[in-house]
Length: 77
Image 1: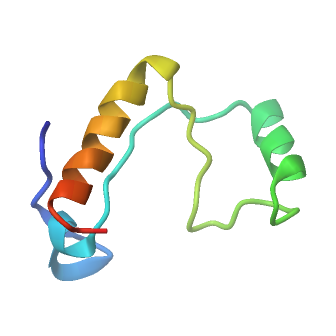
Image 2 (image 1 turned 120 degrees about the horizontal axis):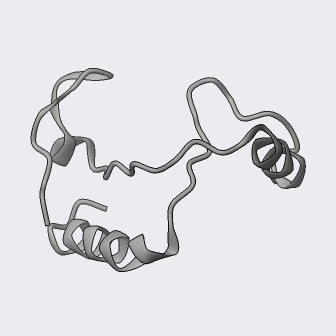
């Protein structure tokens, strides 16, 4: 598992490990999928500009679990 320790543009001087986060890369949703997600969101509205809906293929679940476990083991919750 690759751990990211580069500087975070949103938190200058702080690494990803210090920010206590993991990053996910996926596909952008179609306009229709975006609208469906926003319609069924608990927030009941559009996704804020600072957030995004990302499509993650199911085959990535084991890797996401591994990343979450690594963060948990490092006590970065």
